[in-house]
Amino acid sequence: MKNLLLKTLLIQFVFLSSTIISKAQISIADLDGRVNTITSAVPFLTITPDSRAGGLGDIGVATSPDVNSMFWNPAKYSMAEDDFAVGISYTPWLQALVPDISLTYLSAYKKFSRGQAVAMSLKYFSLGNITFTDFAGETLRDFNPNEFSIDASYSMLFSDNFSGAIALRYIYSNLTGGIYSNNSPTHAGQSVAGDIALYYTKDIKVAKKQANMSFGMNISNIGAKISYTDDSESNFIPTNLRLGGTFTYNFDEYNQLMFGMDANKLLIPTPPIYDGNGTSPDNIIAGMDPNVSVPVGMWHSFYDAPGGGKEELREIMLSTGLEYWYNKMFALRTGYFYEHETKGNRKYFTVGIGLKLNVFQMDFAYLITTQQRNPLENTLRFSLTFNMNKNKTKSSEE
Image (cartoon, rainbow, N blue to C red):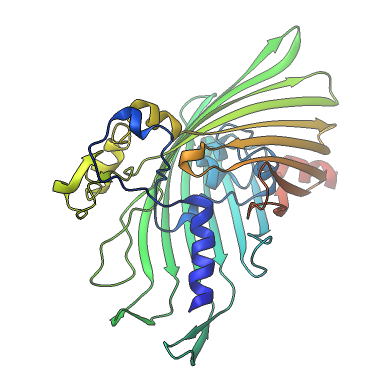
């Protein structure tokens, strides 16, 4: 049981931090610099699954389409160059602290006529082996806590440059294996969610050279709250708004450079400040009641921070990435991810490489933290993609 608590706390440490409670009258100035991270269930849904985006500082909503677009922006599938692709990615997670946590991601898409595409993906998060014990320290059982999501999407072209998509997601989270907690039975948490995505891309000329500008938007994980016991309150899943753009410049037929930026904001309530006498709405002295429905919580997320507009801006996470391709065969990538100190304090650089050989592509990414003893340090990602294009296949056969 202690091991499960440790691993759960480590996961929460990456995405969350504790809320500081004030017991007196408070002003906006008093709130400046106060740690107040936004909490949600199933945070594995927000982990970058693939190596390309992992090497670009976690950008992906407006990058060129690939097999892993389900996580970033499923609307990109309609613009994909290849007719069919399958990919697998693997990430050992928090290896600096725990050796047996990992994330595996499987994805595939198929394009049809008239700019339509369907895609599916599976995201599996394993928390390793846990030994449950009773209060006397006697072993009860061994268990492997795990979470996964299964996604399906449909995308289509609205015009030559503009596409949209919807995605549906089933979420399963089994952290306890049915063990009792505080004399109450636990069960796996389950939920369903959906995404709404848009993608715009246009080829342009800059200094008489071919270039491209792309923009994307994805509102992901719009879905029901999740609970692990029958008598406990349900928790929000990480509904997220992602906006971004990229600019790609072709120096010549061999050399291409892409720069991109993403901005993310969780669309769930910000924890309010209570007076120390309870957590009912009457005890709130700054902020808004977080016990609301999912649609109301999404709307409130734009103005419910106790610290006002300044705190709302701090809730926006920023990512930037740079990608260089040589002869469409070899790629070098780097990026930077920023999260404010009061909202989780994740800050790290990333580097990555890619190698494309005919229908196969291999990608690797490495994460470099800017803080000492950060649990994310030395994170590695590995991805393998198989791309199939009818025209390429016919050409090779001839």
